[in-house]
Length: 157
Image 1 (tube, rainbow, N blue to C red):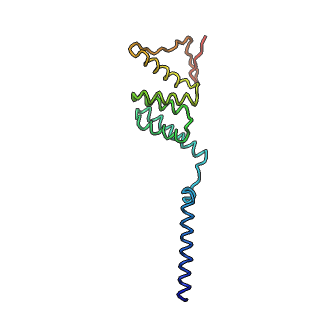
Image 2 (cartoon, helix red, strand yellow):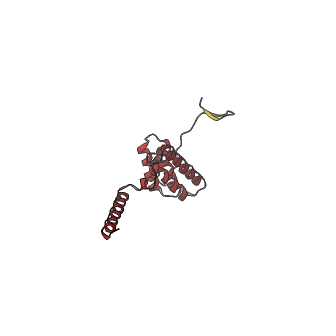
Image 3 (tube, one colour):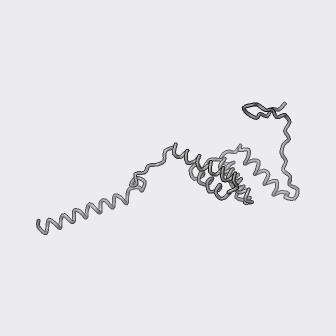
C-alpha cells in the first residue's frame, strides 16, 4: 500500500466521521435515543398518577408535595380546570390568597361553571370588601337525608 492510498483512506474516514457528526447534530435527541412521543394512554396514566399523588399529599397536609404534583399534572394537561381549582385550594390552605385566587380564575377561564372555583372566589371577594364583618353565607337546604344501602341520597320535598 502506497503512502498516497493511506492518505486518501484517512481523508475518506474523516469525511464519514464529519458526516456522522453532522447527522447527529441535526437529528432530534428523542430520535437518537430511540424515544418517541408518549402515547395518549401513557400521558393519561402519568396525569392520573400525579393527580392521585397530589390528592394524597393534600389529604396528608403535605402542601409542597401537593403543589408540585398538581403542577406536574398542569404541565401535561394545562386546561384541566379541576386541577387549577385544587391548586388554588392548596394555596389557600397555606394563606397564599393572591396565588389561590389566580388559580381559581384560571379554572373559571377554562370551565366557567365550575362551582367550587366560583364559591371560593366569591367568598374571597366578599372578605376583601368587608373583612371584619365577613361571615360565610351558605344557602339553607330543605329536605331530608335518607339512607340507601348502596349510596347516600339527598332528596328534597
